[in-house]
Length: 259
Image (cartoon, rainbow, N blue to C red; front, side, top):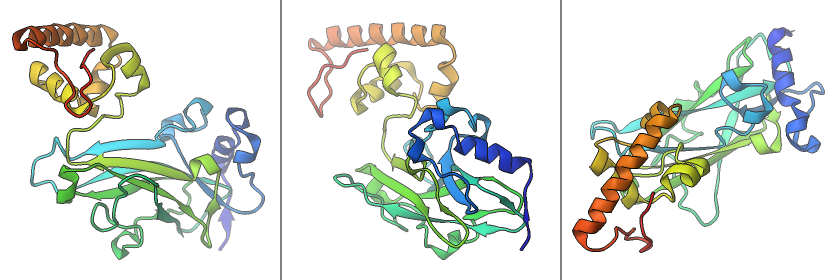
């Protein structure tokens, strides 16, 4: 069928060719074939500073009501090449991560080869961007363990794999208290210190706040609010240590908990 070249093609080619942000050989240049690669949210597309945003996402069912048995996490996928006037199927596959507990298709998530997902993994006509849904299942094993799902683009008749560093994404999830995405290196270095489940539980206990991703996104733009919570947490930890006659420790590592 006839292909349509429009302003979106130009945007996507620019997104793909931010060569100053990575090694030159890491990018596919448009040579008549169409490529796919993951990228940041659409509002950050084309900005080399956010090229590897969302490489890893974290999710937990811990905060959800028992009746919620599935959830969906989205990743952003872009074409490099022409925008077509017809729908085009793309393919994903799971890639095993050595040394980690890998998610099991149709147990922990709806598998990429599951027939129910076939209508979903499609780049619509006239589009250069799509949000990829990864449907997670609340299996009982997630209460005891965190699993990792690494997935990548698979070449098919419509698309080839794009840049190496953006050909895959990773999702870590569970049904227990776990480290939010926002508790990153900067948050660790300047505010909360090293993550542990016991520390996270303590923070919830003394503040009444969930300290989940949504809460972090609410307070992170306001340094004064974060400073306020740090005062509360440090005072609460000092009181706990005094009342119990010994400092609070992480039971898994026996390390002192501090902020």
